[in-house]
Length: 221
Image (cartoon, rainbow, N blue to C red; front, top):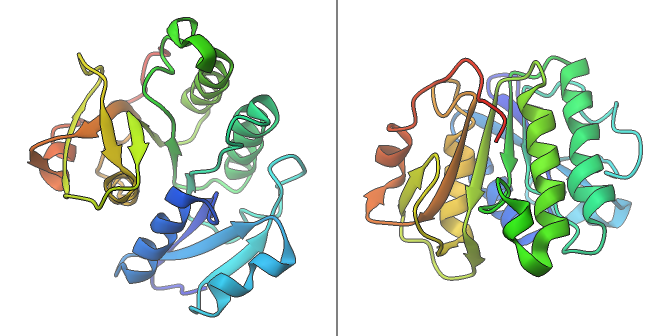
């Protein structure tokens, strides 16, 4: 691991959004990615690109994965298969592991609608799991950013977004632009202790994030 850069653990590194986060971190002058993978055979896809890896299962003990880690991005998900075990309890385990090692920031990929899971219809169980994980992070001692995007698409990123504590509309956003937002949120002076919603918009990502003021701690939604 490069000591001149902050080491960033990425949970969900093999997923569609998490993999984009890893690749952006690899190009960064500030951050060094550490891809968390579940299986030994998943290491090669990252190590072939000179990206550090660590084996960790969100359904098991994670106390080892945060050694020498400065910050964490949680971009993992069960695709609706294990919303409590992975999306909720897995996130909590990683938060606890981060607290144990006193990581400097935890950036959570959540979802628009997690503040009102009762209105999510067929997605209620998933949204409730995300809400519970978000609440657990907010009451932890960690600095954090909780990013709640609308529907994720595989469209090419445009580098322009709209953010707000609660946006007055639903919509879409590309995984490219979500990944960019997650990486920028790792900086100490960006979106610290904030929860915000995120959609495709007309303002540059950096400009929109500058509007997200630092708070001591968010009130639980």
